Amino acid sequence: MEIQNFDYVIIGAGPAGLAGAQYAARGGLKVIVLESSSAGGQVSQITELENYPGIFPAVNGTDFIMTMQKQAEAFGAVIKSVTVSSIDKSGSDFIIKTKDVEYHAPYLCISTGAVHRNLEVAGEKELTGRGVSYCAVCDGPFFRNKKIIVVGGGDSACSEAIYLSTISKDVTIIHRRDTFRAQKAVVDKMLSCGVKTIYDSVVKSINGSSKVESLTIENVKTNAQSEINADAVFIFTGMIPQTSLVEMLPKDEAGYIKTNENMETPVPGLFAAGDVRSKSLRQIVTAVNDGAIAANTVINRIHS
Image (tube, rainbow, N blue to C red; front, side, top):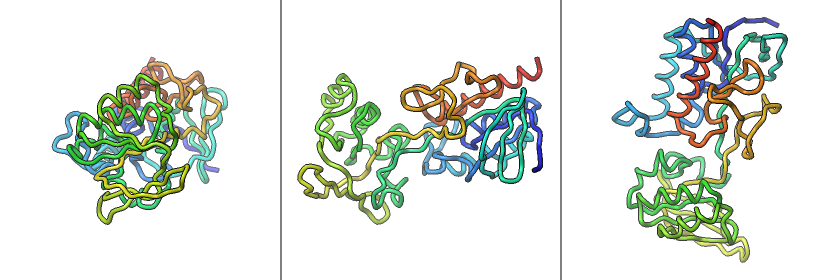
């Protein structure tokens, strides 16, 4: 098997990985980013990115991430489309195995992100970006004074419903149980904001041709189905951090990788950045911050 040596290997070509690649390459490091699919991750689903500082008017997520990739490559970073099968460590070097090549480097960053837990219902995939969203801060303003549905029952769902209630007076939250899992204080605040509730119900389909028009829901106790009109549905049923390559690392209760402020894990030389990392806010701007900090730490370690 071919062996290639680098100063820094980054797994994941989302905003964290590409920002880290740009900083590392600009800092004189030999850096490669390994990505199993196309660059961007969740960013590629954004139709209009309007809350990233300095990007105005809004751009679509694909254009944004392709610009990030070109920028990193312009500084000398290598972006490779390949699936990583395993990670090992021998001495001071990490050994990142793919089908045909082993990549060796003293520093490694996990920037594999997290994926939304989908409802797996008809219409969800087809209407994502057309009324189906997983980010209220990103897409809520597009539905000002529209009929908004929130799906979920935890802290995230209730908190996002509170935020959406500042955008529209017609917000309804659907939960499969008869009580919310969120903290009582959060639920109380949500209800005081005028958010309407539908308990004991699940979404069976999201309906519409070119955009969301309605939802079919089912009562889990009676099995009765009904249809409710909607302009947007925000789904907050959890996230799944992509940590299968580094299951040995310490994680928080939700499964996100714990790091220090320099993005370092307890394994020397191993970093985590972006949505895969345990933190309070997961946005493009915070992912870019993580990637830059991790890369800067590596630069300082190599040049010290």
